[in-house]
Image (cartoon, rainbow, N blue to C red; front, side, top):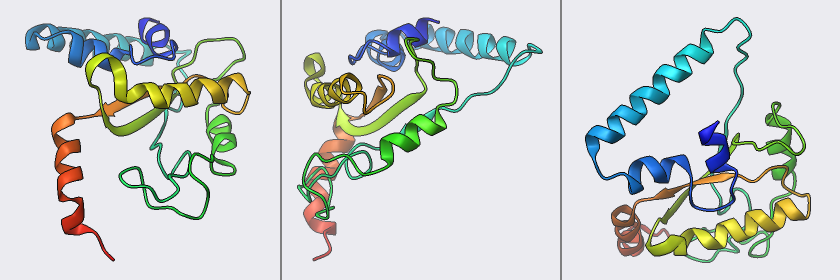
Amino acid sequence: ELKRLLEGTGTYHNLYKLVYYDISSNSIQERIIAHIKEQARVVREKPSYRPGIKVCSDIDDTLYSSGGHFPAGCDKLFPKGVPYPGCLALFRALDKDWQQGATSSNLAFLSARPHVYKSWAEKKSYDLFRELVEQDFMHSMPTMIPGQLGLGLWAMLTYPCFKNG
């Protein structure tokens, strides 16, 4: 329930951030993860347990077009920021446990954008998610798992070395 409440806020405050960014003690992180695993095992062993689907997706050039703008992506087929036709309908169809008005955490986006000071990098994505939910294009507020700053910088700096044409 805590995970669902945290991840339904529409902000960068989610369970991933709480465990891996806000809690600096490795031993406390390990205890929390062990507790979550144990509680998941207990739930799975219940006779009424029915496994659900967690939809994980990239954002740029998967949910919506980057317009071919580096570093977001390379697709120039659609204008920048346009959601791909059918993508949101596919997410809704896959999320069989979703119920109108209930907080859901079945939709997650993976991003190369790192979590930096006060969610600066994630704000743009959450603003888009909120707009899509408010316009009833996206069925529930997703959570986002950010990238790592070091890997993001490495990708930006080495991009010209690996670019094809």
